[in-house]
Amino acid sequence: MPELPEVEALRDFLTEHLTGREIVRVLPVAISVLKTYDPPLTALEGHQVAAVHRHGKFLDVETADGPHLVTHLARAGWLHWKDSLPSGLPRPGKGPLALRVALETGAGFDLTEAGTQKRLAVYVVADPRQVPGVARLGPDPLADDFDEARFAALLEGERRQLKGALRDQSLIAGVGNAYSDEILHAARMSPFKLAASLTDEETARLYAALRGTLTEAVERSRGIAAGRLKAEKKSGLRVHGRTGEPCPVCGDTVREVSFSDSSLQYCPTCQTGGKPLADRRLSRLLK
Image (cartoon, rainbow, N blue to C red; front, side, top):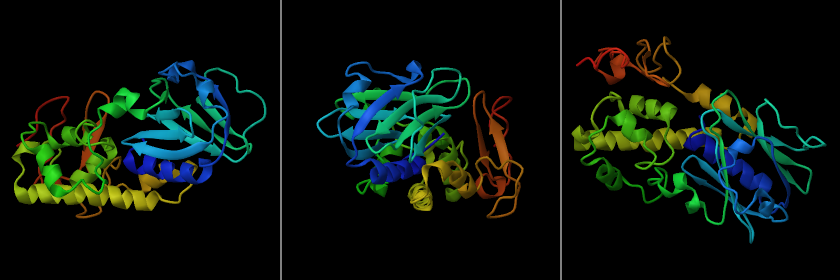
C-alpha cells in the first residue's frame, strides 16, 4: 500500500507534470471506484490544474475555479503517468485500469488496481474535507508544527499497542503497515508495547524514529518517476517484508507475526530483548 512517502513523491511528480495543464477528459473505466456523483467527473474537464496536495495517504488534484479530484490508492492501487496516452477509449473489463485523466497536451495518467479486492477510491468534491477519510485525519507527522510535545500529547492515555496506534489515521496521518514496522525497528521497540507505557526517553526516541524514517523515505523517493516508486520503497525497507533475512543492524533473523489479513515484521534482538513474539493467530505476546 502506498504510504506517506510514496504519496508525497507522487504529489511532487504530479505538481511538476500537471500544474498549469488543462484537463480535457476524465474517463471512468471501473465505476465502482467513484465514491461521489455530484459534482460529476465531467466537472473537472476544461479546468487547469492549480495545485496538487497530499492529505495523509490521499492525493488531491485541485483545479482552478473547479472541483478537487481526490484519490486513495488503497492496498493495490497505483498511478501510471503516460507522456502520450493511448488513442481511443479504454474498454471496461476485468483489467486493472480504473480511471484515465487526459490533458490537452496528450499526456495524462491512469489509475489502476490489481487483485480482486477493489478498494481504490476516487472523489470529486468542492473541498477535500468533504471526503470522510480526509476529514478525520490526525496531524501530519512531517508538518512543521508536529513537535515532540504534540506527539507526546497524542500518546498520553493511549491504551493501544504501538503498532496499532501508529497506523491509526485519525491519530497520525499517513503511516501504514510497512512504515510502522520500520519506525518501531528504528526506535528499538516492540510493536506490542502499550503506547501509554512509554517513558519520556522512549517517547523522544519514537518521535525521532517517526520523523527520521519518514523524512529519509521521502528524500529517497524524491525525483523518482512514478513507475519506479514501488521498487524504491521496497529497496529501502529494513525489516518489513524481509522475514527470514538478517537484520541490517544486528544480524539476527527478521521474524513475522501474521494476522488474518496482514502481517508485521520485527527483529527480536533490536526490539524485544531477543524474545520472539508469538503468532497472534495462536496466542498472546510472549513476555
